[in-house]
Amino acid sequence: MKKKVVNMFFYQSETYQSDLKLAATSIVNVENLYGKTVLVTGASGMIGSFIVDTLVYLNQHFQASIRIVALGRNQESLLTRFQGHDDQISYLLQDVSAPLAYTGNIDFIIHAASNANPKSYSSDPVGTISANLSGTENLLQVSQKTGAKFIYISTGEVYGELDDAYLPFSEEMAGYIDPMNVRSCYSLSKKMAENLCIAYSSQYGVNTIIARLSHVFGANFTAKDNRVSAAFFRDALSGDKIILKSKGQHLRSYTYLSDCVAGILSITSQGASGEAYNVTKTDNAITMADFAKTVANIAGVDFEFQISEIEVAQKTPISKAVLSDEKLKGIGFLPTVSVASGVKRILDTLREVNK
Image 1 (spheres, helix red, strand yellow):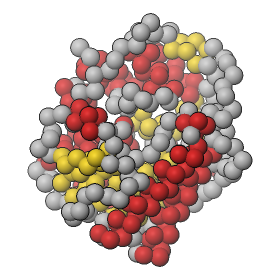
Image 2 (image 1 turned 60 degrees about the vertical axis):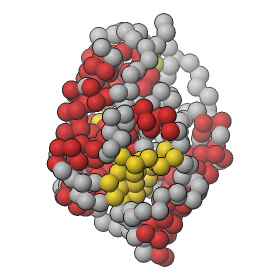
Image 3 (image 1 turned 45 degrees about the vertical axis):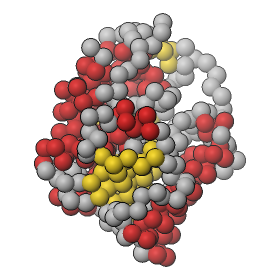
Image 4 (image 1 turned 30 degrees about the vertical axis):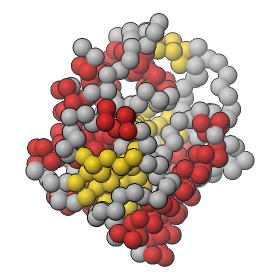
């Protein structure tokens, strides 16, 4: 069956608007963002676009007077994604690996641009490494010149493989990542980019904060998102059976998008320089198989396993990635959305924008 094309104009969805309200009203010391200029890279991606939407919501409903600069490589994607809000957003069209074309004042840089396509980790590992490192250093140099606070969006994959006894993983832990596995290009380059942030903080006094995300799920995944969780929602929306082609025993802590972005903006506002924070909800620890079954049950579609061999280079070697949210809670942020509630909200949003 041909998959339905998802209309990406989310603002017409009441559920999506309630997600924006939840995120905006959950940010710790949100007033620290008011009147500031925030540059968001990867602005048309799932996380970057919701950050921009939340900042727009703050301007519209709380008179926050935040100047929003949305950076992306594709003008059509940006204009389509944020249609109707051109008066709220300045667009910057470029690759983050190139010198920044924006010359105005910047107070915060939230670097959410990254290759999150698992297939490319094997097909273009060099490009994955290069983008993660060169783009990050280029933006760190901008932060050094402007005094902007730099928030690096990293991943829980930097923890590598750790013994079950260490679950959930806290920020000071470090496990094994095999440098001889080409799939490690993503996790190792993200880990190196984290160290680059710390190096710029130590050597040049740049105010850097690292956000380590667990698996994020939300309605505004992009058309290019080939993660299995996005496929589950596409199938469910089309009324198709959800099929899992592996045993799905990888254990992850899942974070709903509104919690994720509110957490990122909370550490942007309140986080300490030179620190890493897990942006997660520890209680949302679930296997991929159980997540798929949850989507199927709430959507009212069938579910089955069709076990097949997955290309080794594409398969993550990390079996468990449950992150601790204690440090995030320590700055006053409390994630609230459960897996089941988040799945329902995603399906409601997708149905509302496709009426």
